[in-house]
Length: 551
Image (cartoon, rainbow, N blue to C red; front, side, top):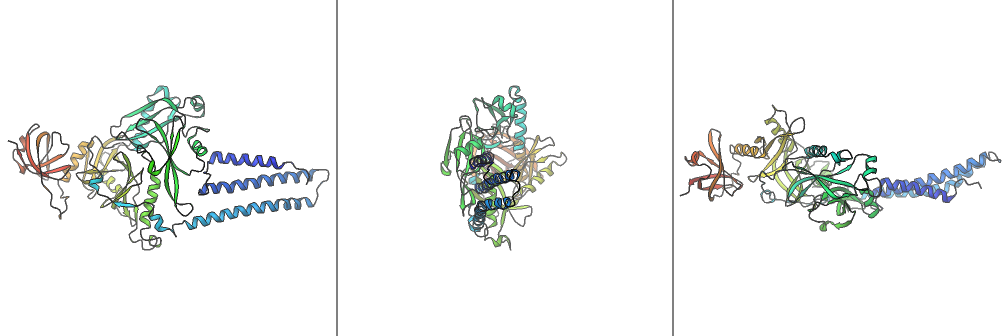
């Protein structure tokens, strides 16, 4: 065995090249608390074994074909020469696999049910205080699918860009200057177009106002050099891995700051249970998409303009743990006393310039109702639970669709709004082409109360009119009367259950007042500009208890 076809140095170089290519494409974190890194190490060791064994096989094959001819001991010599190093490396692999299995078992839900339950801590919330009532100019009517359509339409009008660039599928929901907005960067059309344009970078990103549906293509003075569409070191995933080799990343999202500067927000993972269990977020790396400048921030130090540090998938997973392990692991399987789960779907709310995830909470013995709902801040993970039995979202969607069944419109997944201090589902109704045609408000507690209209304002007016048919106040509560005076800015009438009711607003006041004709026979003659004095109960939607013309 003196003839060596592959010297040790060559085998080392081949192994190193293969391992580097594996790392280049897989990009595992160089961190022992990463399961992916352990898998990478095991496969790297196997690569070394295969390359070493291949070199020995080539050497023995040469011996067989040499002038010495076939020697009976050659095969035995090969096995003997391979045996020791192969057995040692296989033993190392076995130890690593066994250790990873132990780490997984020690951190499993069987032994850490309480820890998984506490990954997300829910505090009781006050719905009226936490969720302010929006006026009709603040309600988002655009879902992700509609935003994608609006973006594609906008891009189609840009003749100088459409031949070279496409639109990324990001469409991250953020709050931009107090407005619910979806943003997404452009991307290269194909590798050839990347080659032609990569020196200048991506020239623009798209913004979709979720309230007005206004779609803007924002052109940049300098193109974005770092994105998921790059092929080498400017690829955002590869750039982050080589600059922060030990960080374990979760989701990487596209956002813009208050000045419109594009950034990539890469959340970093921190494990709360065992060695690599209880996945949570410990901070975020912010990368300027234009310059590549980056900084790591601990969770409490992340800038307030950042909206999505926690991924929706992670929040939903932790909500599942919270409801599942309320009374331990075995109760989640046997008996299931008090076990809850989030409903199948979620949406977002804009509150205090943050994005909050909304989803309903229902029993595992799922029916068509919720026992409450939760709001979770996607930047801070502040989580609030609201105990409110009501309709499950898909039941509310079906109820809204039933109101327009002759038109065949389909409902978007609802968002939760405060209408007159009542939790209310709001949803858009779309035709088969995916275009928004109507809007609906559905009462959470009594989902048969539905108001629809061709505009959010019309749907809200119809919804409030239907609420007037039903006593939605608690019998144990005595409404507090308040007084106000002012000039009527607009007034409309409607017949509800055989009684004429008047809906009006006062100048400088966005609240809607509802007065029954029995309150004052002069109501039909109180037009815009009439100055009135009245008493009422309620907050945003106010029921008039007495009204008269001011002297």
